[in-house]
Picture 1 (cartoon, rainbow, N blue to C red):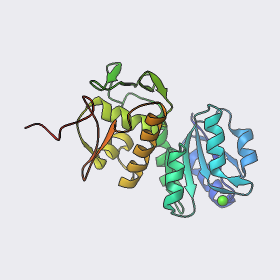
Picture 2: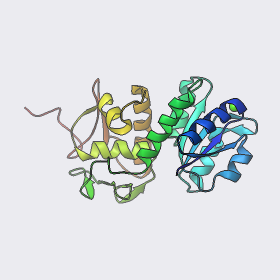
Picture 3: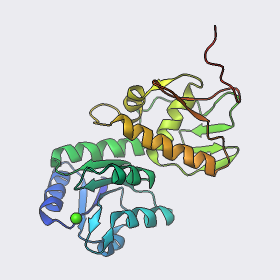
Picture 4: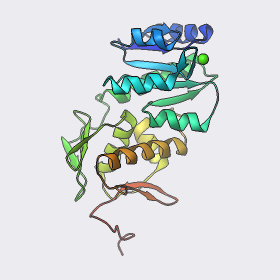
Length: 239
Ligand code: CA
């Protein structure tokens, strides 16, 4: 049974989420501020995180959680549909972002989907161990959910890992954003192109930080993304 921590200071929202989650078989606990959240983080599989809390910002919790090496899935709840917040949340490592108001039922569906992504289950296509992108020094191991570049481990969020794994599985192939959404998030997700772009941006940043090529994940203008193959010049298609 997955354990969800709801970090939310508006009791009505927190209670309705907890009720919906418990009804669906999750165990759910509520923290109404950052301090309470810290005390309840141990053993949590997923955090529903409000950004505006009485004793600080939800971003602080994301940072501290990631720094401590804990990796619960995180879905950010925000009261404003603020592009900057959304991008920041995804870049700091949140798995999803939801704007209030939302229905508890919708949230439960998202919790389920995020947790499904978190644990490579039987629905994940079985990869033959390790995939490498041709001449590119990238490795993606779906069994252990570890990725490396130039032999250095990449500390990726779940979405970033899934994006990379999808692209690396077919080096050189251009994936449209819609295809990436379909493969990484699956059905029933209202994911925008911009969300994909935000995650790709985060992925690139980490590749560069690990000493990799910023053009590894290549933007194909007007189409989507692909993993660059065979070194510098990808040569604009073969004739
Ligand atoms: Ca709040």
